[in-house]
Image: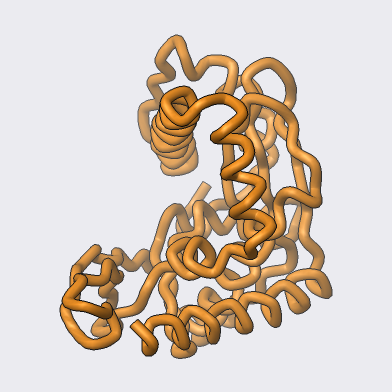
Length: 231
């Protein structure tokens, strides 16, 4: 597996200014002279009301403290699994702790289908005003996939994954901008959700779907900018 694209690193920075509102400092990413919010920041700040209400209902159902523990544990598992996936794709040493074995066994068959690695966790950015860090750009069965690795305790329904698909679409547009001189063309998006006790869920995103998701992300990005200006 050979890397064929230069890898850019985004530096997390805080900026003061009117757009931060009421003296607050805004977390941004700086890369190659550009300073923008992250894709996940944009999506989190513009999450639809029904999604916010669903999350609040879940917190109330399980209890605030339990919800925080569950979220914290899930976040930790996801971060540590990402690190091992990156190591695997980089042909580096992989060390799987006991509590991640189930997730690793779930996602490994997906990783073993990779024929070529072009980029692992490299920053991409777009003049529309955002930065993203795709988990991987890889070739599978002759097609260039933009991949996003997730973890979950239980299988997820496609209708729950709207923001994941918008994230993929935004990363694709940014990657095309950054690597235009390389003739980069992402042919499929892939959201792979590792589970603790069964094979990973795979959600492929077609070109047509990514185009539609990109239009939705653009609307969310405009809403994000309006809210920043209003402070």
